[in-house]
Image (cartoon, rainbow, N blue to C red; front, side, top):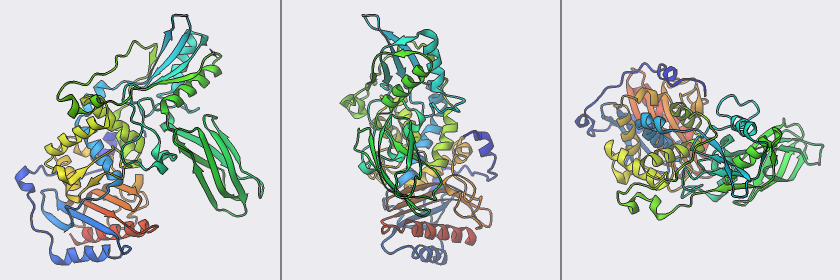
Length: 493
């Protein structure tokens, strides 16, 4: 995303009040009529839906409170916590950041292997129209040095090998939202499949890179509907596509997750080298760093983490700006990039493990005055079904952020109601269009929205609305009820 943080921050003209800690003590909730209105709006959601709501002023006065201390699955509201840590440590993280590197390694027999080193960069690309952070640049460096190599090795030992977080649903792994995490990330670790309908009764045509094998069992049917299902076993490189696609459907671009991103990056580098006339005699390999007990800070008991040393590189790319990446994380709700941000924080503090990241989260939450019992995170993106937060935890974090010198820059990473990101199509035509800045969250039977809004009178409020346990296929109805409740609050205050 090319929009600068400075430009995004300038969108906001709201004044943040720097309240002392004692001014944020809980006050009496809002008058009964407003609470009743909010409850009536939420009651329009499907039966069985469970809601938690907390709305406060910047100074900490509680205006609306419904089950504020119950814990909910937050989905992508988790990204608020991850990017808050990233912003709190932004200068140090950016200074330590490195781009992807490549080097040549000569064996005792004289053969030359190409080693591609990942350093947590989420933006490395091999797209044909790539302009910056391009794998092609590294391929050019190798091709200029040698015309024959043996093996191509993807090395992602910069981080321990934790490709999925605890609580990731196995059925999400095949999707782009559940792709594997790795210090060596290329093309968002997504396999692109282009599909176009064929003749009636025939299979559609398929175009892809060749990294995965595609079992095409889709049938072209009459009409404009598509119902394509993808199935792939974990660590398999065979995708089975089934279902139907309408003959009148425009060509589709489908994206699927990659389980071993380091292997894919090395494979892709090999293809680029061959295209440059470099002879590749060997195979594609990987070097992973297995997760051990020493990757848990509790087991290290204060001792520093032991990290692998890196030899000098033949060539390396510049590290991309982390602040710009956090815009994409929050506005697009980009799972992979958020996971890598947590692991980057974790490596700055320890070994780069999820456990190290969790320890940093706890430290920041303690600093923000958020009770440890009010949250529990197993990942950095919100894909884990183990994650829990309360509305009070979310509002506590947002209140703390509002008192930080980087608060407006961070707020600029949030989607804007009716304008962009995951809120582009919500609140249009309401009082809150362009006046609500919040992180969304969406997972099975879970919806979340937490952030800042401006009321009719111009007051800035902090809010968190968490919804869980909606019946199947009723998530949109629960979301609509939440939106109506927030509009009612803005209109009343």
